[in-house]
Length: 133
Image (tube, rainbow, N blue to C red; front, side, top):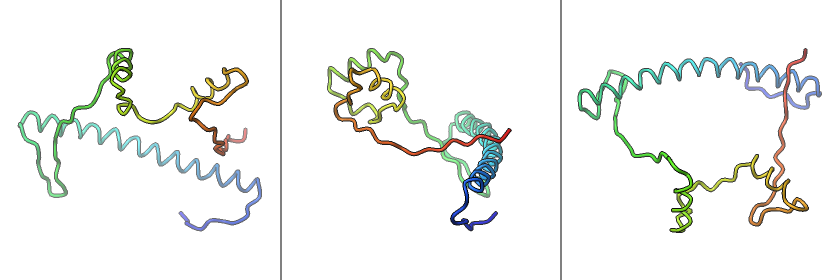
């Protein structure tokens, strides 16, 4: 693998370079997926080991495993959650992010396609890459 970046490629050269790099990324992601699956199996075993032995840490020759359980939210009824947030002005419970796809639909459906107050539209450049048939 080279770290040299070629400057000023033609359109065809760019397409070929992008496709080759995307293929390498795909192959590496496949390997990463296998490793993540394997890691998850051993992680589950480590959790079961800590629970069955009632310990919060154990060591090997290459590292230490620490175990703790941290409460995480698991919403069962969004209507009740939204009511609580509104009634208590607890908007800080939500992540401050607007869903781009839903936002585009909302703007497209507004009369005159008016902007939603407080949200500015920003164009983000992207490219698509498809294999030659």
